[in-house]
Length: 618
Ligand SMILES: Nc1ncnc2c1ncn2[C@@H]1O[C@H](COP(=O)(O)OP(=O)(O)OP(=O)(O)O)[C@@H](O)[C@H]1O
Image (tube, rainbow, N blue to C red; front, side, top):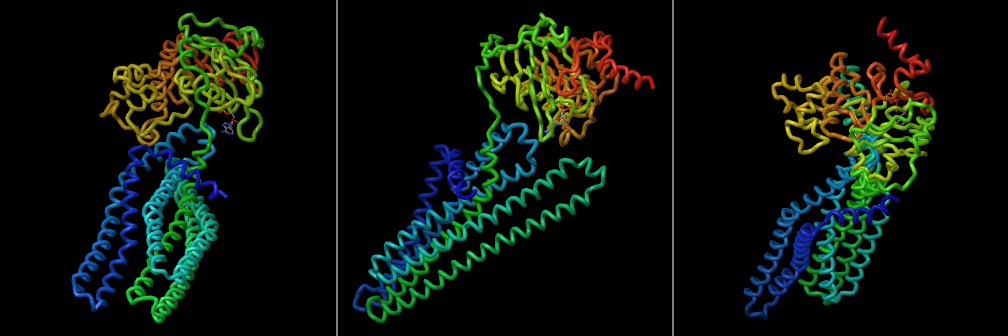
């Protein structure tokens, strides 16, 4: 079933990646392939001429005729072979460009798939889908250019010559053989495709297991699970082995079926040609030619059948890549970016007034006067459930005034990071709306929204690149002075100065050559350098020692002035300066207000505060 729908999709995918220059080169190499097929097809005519000339004793210039036929025969053989050698060399550059485009297209598409896709899929399997898909495309291109096109031309040429021999019986045998080949090739295709799909799935499991072990190398080593992982891999590899054997058994069965057709046809044609020779309807040259053509007709038919088999296997390999390419991307752009950036928004939907957030008298802080562009953010009746569990946020109503700092606190798992992800549209709420000033955030172009928000996430993962590159990731083209300034604000500069290679130090796979606190500071510098309208600090300083944390918080308060800032933290002492503190519980806002108000209220926040004070003292 997958195979049936894969044909047009695979063809479409390749066509999409073919531009003018690629198309021209492919046509040129194809023409070479066609020329090779034609020449190979007519070569035996020279041999027939040679044999007939040798037999023609009445011909006075027999030697010359023989020489001409011999040269024609050898030259056509040599030229056909030469073209066969040259074509792959010419084709390879074009094909590599095509595969490069395919990789780029796949990577672009995958990076733009929804966040949930990446959480559900194994990265190893995704990379494997690409690699195997490219292998499948290579097989298809090779089969089409090297086998199918030249072979079809050869079959047509041979058939034309065959018809000119005026041997209806032989022609019928050839036709019957062709039909038999097609029948065998098509009936075996489904079984082969299924086997190839199973190989592909098992192979993805093996790749994912290896990738997962390598990306989690630290826990693997710390918990000493190397041998267990290797044993588990042995299970997956033996399954892969079995599935390859099944595939090759099926290929063999298909090969035997084709061999049977081949032998039957050879027998039939040989008997017919002998009969023709005895009857005098075939010369000796004609007899040799008929048999050579039989072989020559069967060989391309054989190659066609093999190519069909390879293509069906290749389509199964391409299947996972096509499935990923068909997964819908994130919704990027709904409304004009300019209107949003200039603050000159068209208001499509009514956003709630501050008084709608009536749960607390403290919820209607006036906006900060310093940055007119910093947005007011409102979560209105937002509900979201993740996975199969109950709603993480069942009814979130929250007003974050423009240019103010709002702290979010609450028990682990109550949905604080989920809130931040909703704002960045990594998740989509099941119900409710998040407003950016007066616009629902779905109306903002996704790229613009993310450009305006900088997040320091709980777990900082770095690229295996230099410190400078990691800091500048959100601001391509940043100068070294700008990078250094951001690093200073994140209390990182002094540390970097002690490194022999300074900002050119490579941080290792996922930044593992740095401490957790150092990674966090890079993440803070990154966010600062991005210069956004909204900051989200999600446990941004949780890995730092107290003095460093205090210094960074002091700097961040300065940087965040006039920007809308969301601070998520468990350590309440780091949040007491926030304009508003929001306690999340039971899927919504349990209480909100500034530090003193909440302490006076003696509710959830006050008890959390007391508990943490007690911990500090004891
Ligand atoms: N992709 C997901 N699929 C299913 N459940 C998820 C997913 N991501 C998060 N969750 C669940 O959603 C809930 C809220 O997670 P979230 O990360 O928002 O909590 P949090 O309040 O930030 O917690 P913490 O303070 O521990 O960081 C948790 O119960 C978590 O297990």
